[in-house]
Image (cartoon, rainbow, N blue to C red; front, top):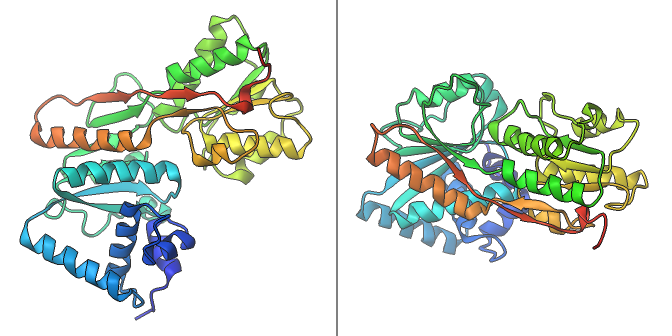
Length: 350
């Protein structure tokens, strides 16, 4: 049998090697719930270097599970690792633990999605309910739903009329908050603004585009299509090379870019700073998600906070409600957000 290494555990969980190594050492800089997940995953994978203290913890957990039947819930998501997703997962685990359940996180590889391969123990016999955090392909989503297990989804594909409400959805509010950010930029004197985000990918990004569009139209500012990178891309502009190749095609720069998330915004800031542009004097940039990196980059990033742990807890409460009310009509719930204005969009100081 192949020896299990820290890098194998990290790949399985979608975490960095450094995070896994710290978690296995019980380093307090790693969130407690993350440490628990890493320890349990390492044990299940057969990692041979678990300390005596960790083994005692595992035995204690096994005894606790053996003494009472715990309901098991699943979180299904693509391979992603960031404080955004970690915050949501911690919120999910907190609420499930509060309801005396346990949680298993399944990271779906791209090839498994293409081949319609589900985790082997994602079955009605093993799983009380499922929270799906990724907008998978229609075929893979159907594959999960065909299991017949109660489900709730974070976000959805673009909802086109007539829309078939087949499952519960929790949405992050984006239209109002991006409308607010765009209006603020216009009020500061920005006359040319661009939007960056794959609006074909999911409803949440499309809603953010609508907020941008309505703010521009409301102030009678014509949207310049050359500044709006909104078409389909394989990685939705989340991969640096993909986004930078699109920015390379622009022969002019607008007064501001409103970005669909912080990852996009940070690449935009870094790209234009390398070219000698001053942020925000020459180009204002805003994001969405309130990632920790937004407070590391200079200047600090204007963004929208969905309150990630609260979002995770809300997903669980909806799932538990669905389990108790299987015949009720499906619901779409919107979780409100808050705009944080920082230096990246402060083109003019009042």
